[in-house]
Structure formats: structure tokens, C-alpha cells
Image 1 (tube, rainbow, N blue to C red):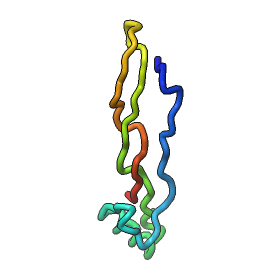
Image 2 (cartoon, rainbow, N blue to C red):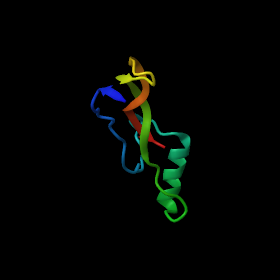
Image 3 (cartoon, one colour):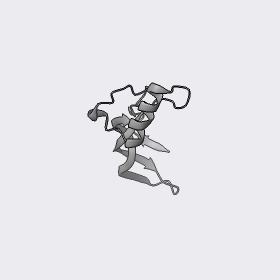
Length: 86
């Protein structure tokens, strides 16, 4: 059972990627090609999508299986830190 935090903001990445895909969106080569194909043949390929590319950890306090209180200061990949086109 988690004691703290009672909640947190996980954030999210949403939406489609449009041509041209800016470098700030760190597109993969696949996303670039997929977007170009979609521009010419939309029925053959969907647009690349905005997805999480980097995550940050959060700290949690919880009861372990023996009822002891534990502190996990690196619960990895819990908060979206960056988004990109994939």
C-alpha cells in the first residue's frame, strides 16, 4: 500500500506529428519516413505519433509485505520528461 505521495502528475504525450517534423521532437528515421509516406499515400501509412521519449523517477513511501514502512527514492520511469515523434 502506498503511503505517499497520495497522487502525482504523470503527464502525457499526445497527438500526431506533421511534416516537417522539427528536430526538437527528436524523430526517429522511421517516424520521418512514415510521415513522408503518409503525406503522399495517406491510405498506406498513418502519421507518426507523439509519445514519451524520456522519463523521470518519483519517490514513494509504502508498506512492504511485512507491514514495514519503506522509502523508494528511485521508482523509475514514472513521469514523462520529454516527448517525441515515433
